[in-house]
Length: 103
Image (cartoon, rainbow, N blue to C red):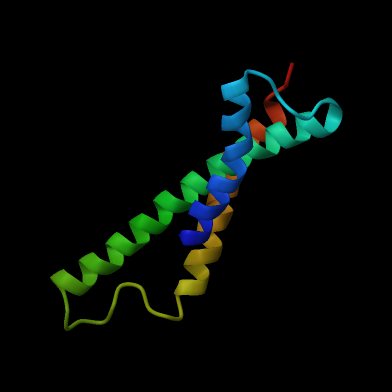
């Protein structure tokens, strides 16, 4: 989650700076690619953050409501949930990366 927050800040800074100066610093094909990737990465970071917070909430709910039972999310399931979170976060905004045309 901290990595997602850090990468979101790094990738959103150039776009916010460009909005302040009302122009984009990089032109041509590289600028268009960077603009698409920056928007795509911002969407991914936000979706990963939300999904991780939901998983933390489910785990805390299980440990508070049923503390003596088997945990809802075990340590063996954690790698699966991490990979699934990344796949879902990339799959949802993927259409924006392909369909959006920059002018």
